[in-house]
Length: 259
Image (tube, rainbow, N blue to C red; front, side, top):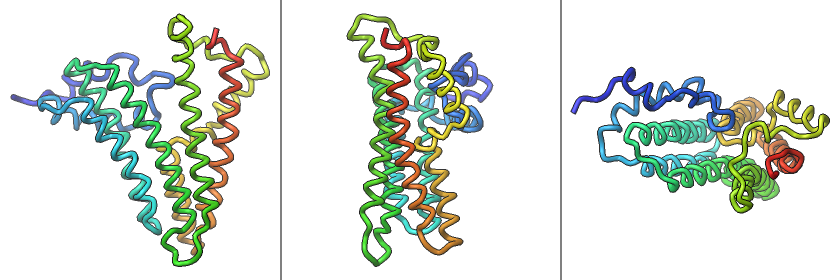
């Protein structure tokens, strides 16, 4: 059976609006990965590979970012970026294959969310262990591992806060939340939200952005000859995670999403 062309795939797997979803599409997907995934789709849509199998593989690559980051020096950071980019690629591919084959399931949606949770956590835990200098030969400073784990917990809680809105609305017999309901009711909170959205500092605790930041920190460490920048980054990301967890919770409570 001949493989479909990219032109044949595009209108089916990239329906109108898929790249414009406010919270469902990552900037890297819009910028380049959706075009890469189209080329991979050609070789998968005619096989017996299922979307859920691709989601499992996606999650595996995301989790592998943690041990990859334990490799000392720049190469560990490079491997971490590669693992997360493969996660992102498969995150695009699994949904696209599902659209082409018309194989949709709630289990697939659930597995995709689990993969996102685990990947964000793996990158930040890996950063903390990297900062602790497990293989440096000296005393392991577990403070950095704790801070990395704290950042990971914050990243997971932020996602959970968003997902639990849907759970609460469902249990209360309400329809899914609309985008307009996400806007805070108070002008002060709305201004703070717009400022945070403009600065986008909160995105640094997401797996894709964090992996790229870790690579930058590793390059700076290589020039300096120690782990100063990696440790500084670990502390900063832990602080961002804590602040963002609280602000996000307040933002949800101040909006109409739970009404």
